[in-house]
Image (cartoon, rainbow, N blue to C red; front, side):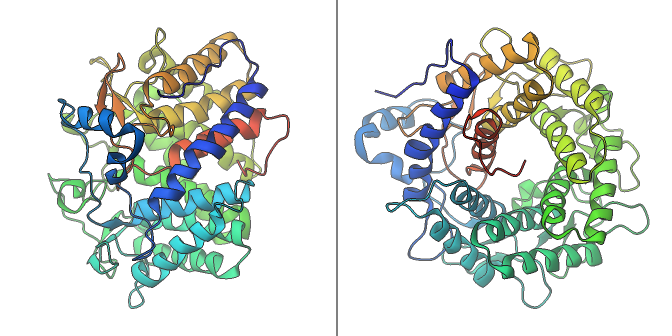
Length: 442
């Protein structure tokens, strides 16, 4: 029977201790035992292990059901973002003290770092390729801002965990390459898609790179998604280097995100802008995920603290209150997927990473401004996650459910389902509320 966690009546410090045990004894052992590809290097993210063990019968029943949106059982490739997300996770949990005799998470991180450098680093043109096959042979040499951002993010965290200089040197070199090749000197900001040599793909396309090559974003547009994660990477790089050029880029990225994608009036939030920052003017590109808006809110505060400028709590509260008003289930808990425009209702699908970023944002909210509304939302969200987002004893979140809690996509691991969002959110909760504290940077 699936283990459940009951937080009713508990103080946040007690919940933090429960979550620490949950990570230590259930979640991280799952990722260590299933993700490391000992034969080929790097990480192989798939659900194929699901068919073994005590949950085999339940899993087969699910496979035979109508949950048609789940991903393939078997891994088919290694994609840059998922490799980097797992490198980040293993590095982070080692730094926070989760390694032991049975599972050394620093060794797991080293395993991923070695694959990243040996198989995905482009020695000729710089940067890191988008994807390889399972053996590490390059399938797509394309360069994306989104992918390079996550590479920097992972390299910085591996440097923190290992103490090695080379990962940080690699991160700085990659930042400089992106600045050289992708910085938009005409309109400001950064170009998001390029060929192997970073030659920009500027022609507008009605098809997304997600469809064509598995990359997020639209050719010729600038996106809130890529800009959010580029800012995230710059925060961490500046934290460790105090590099003046990185600081300038971080300030620019912060202002771009605040102005064009996640403004203080959240009704003006959007996924895409034209290259010169004008509105796209096409209803097909309207709307934005509540996950991205709340993720930006807490990362904005983090960026401002790192830059030693006054945190914009008014902007933060506007975003969180808007998301809670229009995109949160105040009966069962959980954040909805997205709202397309002010005239439509929200898509009530509940996606795992949106819950994770909602958790991180609400942790920031209650720490800053303890009030009954934020507190109740945080409690409801935790209840939702552990009641509906988890099907199995290992505690891994499934990809999505309906608003009522019926599983839609039961994927636990895949190219777009790694451990980064939820591990980061849970360690943030522990960091904020554990009586023992932690070394978590944010």
